[in-house]
Length: 254
Image (cartoon, rainbow, N blue to C red; front, side, top):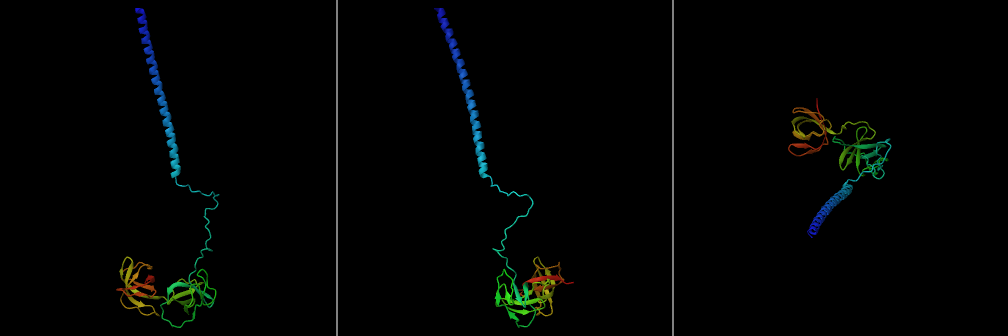
């Protein structure tokens, strides 16, 4: 009887140890499986995150410019010809006595007679050139006077504009443009203050005194006391001191 109780006691201890062993093993296996699941979940998450990042990059990337493949034989870009749909306007021109004259942009200030030699009575579009006598490409009703050789004075809105033979190679300022000499009194940042000296022959004398004039068309460096020659459109602004409206050119004399 005592032996039987001892046997049962040892068997119970053995079974408890066995259950503890299997319990520990089960827990270890569960822990291992948990780690594997965690690792797999992390990889899957990374894969999804990377895929999402790639998608985001594709969505946010700037569009790629598609370049046409060329053989490299011609580096110049061929632009469409727009001259037919958007023709280029010609400079103001008139035809008189079979000669085509072009506006020089200068104004005649020389004293002359008031007799007109003709009138512009027909016109073509600004994109064309006159092809008939007394014709222009900027309007009609304008009177004109013959001037020095190769030049014509056309009164555009009452202003005597100097036109020159379109085939002329002369690039000098026409002799009909007012010019005078003056002495530099002050040199400022954007203008000169000059004292009038004399006007060229053939023009009305300017009033004595000082004039302010822009340095935009000054050809030479000048100092106080230098003498300059000034070509102008003849418009004087009545301020104090008076101002030269437009100076075509300013040159140092001597």
